[in-house]
Length: 529
Image 1: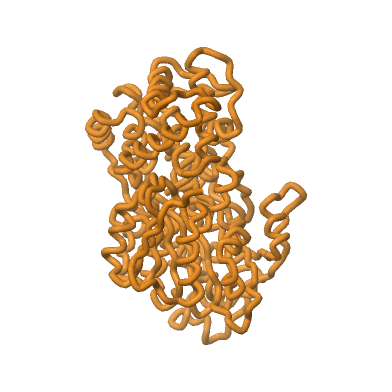
Image 2: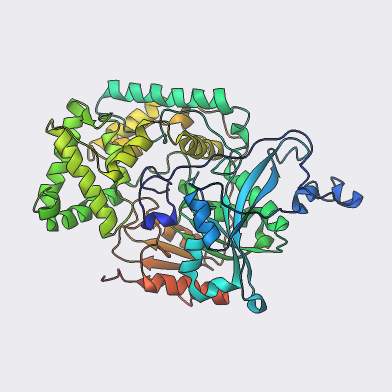
């Protein structure tokens, strides 16, 4: 899970703009038979014993402009890249394919080298809940010459972005909060999480049972068939790595070349996925502090690592005593740690500078000064403290809660918080806190038991603070036929095409071009510039 404003908010374009991206909510549920865009199948094809999903697999896609209006920046970029968009009809409930339907929005840039065509490359940029429809232009640029051999397909998964929406009308864009510093604060957070779960039951209760990675994987296979592809290749970042593992397990004969970047260990996947990431985030904070100390003249946060870290701790302590006022927002010890956590997923000067400006604003607020937040901080606060992107948090949470059950007893979380908080007062209250999944109905299906092996290309940075490096190594051990590309000495979440590592990008592109994995695992140095 990733992101600049929540776990899982990775979008590859975030290398250019690390602020929150507004989610466009479009599409609607329909009742009864599939719409006219689903082509009628033959009598033999529609017999349940033959293929109960035949009318979805054989639907005719109506390709159209991706541009929704003059202010649609994603649509403009897709249009300029030559992409077209379509809506794919899928069942709401795969156990009842003749019932309600929903739409999944996709985009596609066709390959131009038809003589050496590989097929369709489906994308998922993470989350869960992240939009991917706008990512084909970015991915094609990363692929270089090999892009001509693929149809690059972006997908807004069910309930995300331009697909049929799920919105619980939350007062926040994320379920992630800090637990506070005492039992009273934890009790407030438990009440907040329970309220978020209640809102989802109220506003989206009919959709929640069908929000899961398994259903997203089923949707992917409908998309594959509707595109006329016998097999698909796949590029998944962060949570998208887990989705790729699930798809390859459920549809093993339908998968071709697979790249998983920011690899999740499926044994650890679930509503408490962030537990155990404290060390990686502390290390990322220290490395950011080193950079910031070297730029003391610009930010004034301290001339040494220790000095910068002391500034962060002073801000944390001040927020725990009295909420900080930043613009129109107030940050207490439930929100401040989340803002810091969100500043540590990208390892580059632009992201470091954005975070440093944000911490400088927070220090000024802690000193009682009036503050107009920097763009990065303003975006993070709007996402965390308003319902502006309620749909994102709603979709993300519904998938996590719909995949794996969470402990229901609040005392479980309190014990973990007390234990972890002895060593870490900043990140442990975020990574171990209770969340709405503790108050959710049990998942409709059991979690997927991931297949024993897959010849995939895995990519991870050693210091990744979201999908930590031990997770990638665990998957590599389980998948003996796979290969692991390691970016050394970088606190970076999402590497391919994002970080500027020629070593990583060349290795991935060689695999996409030939279908042959490297003979051994590959280690790539951190770029020097």
